[in-house]
Length: 241
Length: 117
Image (cartoon, rainbow over all chains, first blue to last red; front, side, top):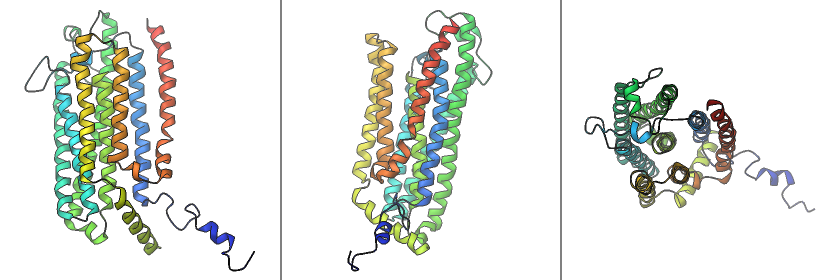
């Protein structure tokens, strides 16, 4: 071996996994956001899978097309999926404005970032208002944690001929799971809106301009898209299936 | 130390510019998501009631469509497709545990329904 060749140890040190640089080529905070979201995905999966197991093992279940058939304030009956369709559209739209804010951040365009972030915040608030109406509607029918509607009302929500005992049991399971899972998701949306507001204030104050990068927008963006991702699953398993 | 981190950062940003989300791409993904959701609505509101499709046929379709949507959100909106393969694997491989729980509890709920009859 000639002495001109680099020492073997130095050669080893030039690989991505031997220290000195980020092997994932990603900033620490962004990577930690990803791992947080992975853990959050486990939490939501546990909730949704428990829901699936309880529903799958139930002899009867309140039919989504009968429970969710109103557009609060406009149509009382006969419009299944319309209101939740609007909610889904609002959330997807706010995801788009978020990713546009990230894109504007890459170009260091402070003004555009602010406007897209404000759009995202408005989308989040609209979604939360819709969810408030949806909860209020179900609550007025008699559903709540630990509460189910009267037998006459419940009969409207079931297809087939379940017994009274089956109706009472599965309605209670439905109510608890619905409010817990959509509530947990809504709490995420709420936190997301608060975080977005804080980050937007920072953008306005010029924090990221001074820092030289709008990476923080990407990190909160990841959180916001995750909230949208969870809604995609909640929508399928509560409203479609 | 801090200057090194800054260097990595600048490299990363410069690297990312080649293959990142452009405005055109963002809107394309949006229309794909909107399209998939519309297909779900067409199935739920029109196809299934008109042709009397059973849940056993329709539900797997919904789940596949949902997974497509999840792919587009994670890969493009969350940018995971453009990250290093190592990072993508670190996030995606642990999802095996979720699949495991689904299999276990689906199996278990078959048993529960027999108990409840």
